[in-house]
Amino acid sequence: MIVKIVSILVLFNLAANHLFSQEVLAVVVETEKSVKPGTPLHSSGLPVFEFRIYTNENDLKSIPDEMLDKHVFGQDVSRRLYLLESKYTYETPAVPGNPQTKTMVRKPVIYNAVRRIEHYLKKGVKRDSSTLETASITFSKVLDVALNAISADSNSFEKAIGNTPDMDSLIALFTNRVSLVM
Image 1 (spheres, rainbow, N blue to C red):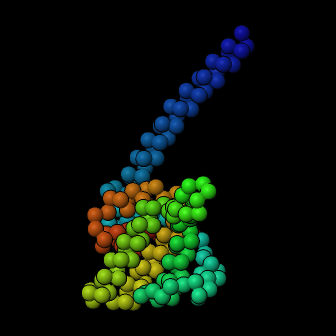
Image 2 (image 1 turned 120 degrees about the vertical axis):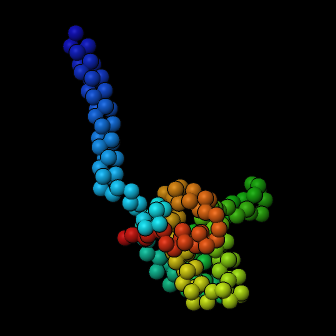
Image 3 (image 1 turned 30 degrees about the vertical axis):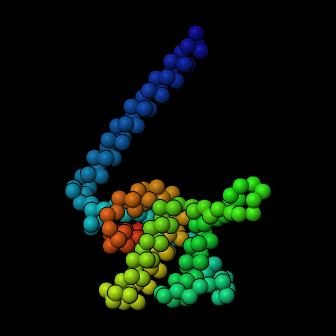
């Protein structure tokens, strides 16, 4: 008899908690709407993505100059690109026993977007539609975002990259809609 009463109380408690949690969710959603009626989180109305900053200055300084390729945007960008390659790509054997390897990419959506942005900025500098300094600063910011996104949960950011229609919007996504926090 005591077992039945305890089990009924437990079931009642679970049901009441479930109902109460739904009411709390409704109250939170209503207060968010009342605090900011129609005002988006960001001035453009688009979501802002936050990634935690992992200081990689020591990683950048530890890369020897002999391992770096010359880059149009300078030595700093070249170091960041080397770090991007080392963090985003790895090699696996194509077939066991065969010395050939296959290069795999972690988070290919972000990696490929960074490569497309690099190509676009280089073309802009060649066509004189952008200065070398501006393109270098922009690409450095894109690389910082990509290097910090590797260790974060970035599914929504990757979806936003996939839904971005053109290259200028993609650059704006990396430079304006991502904030790096401590």
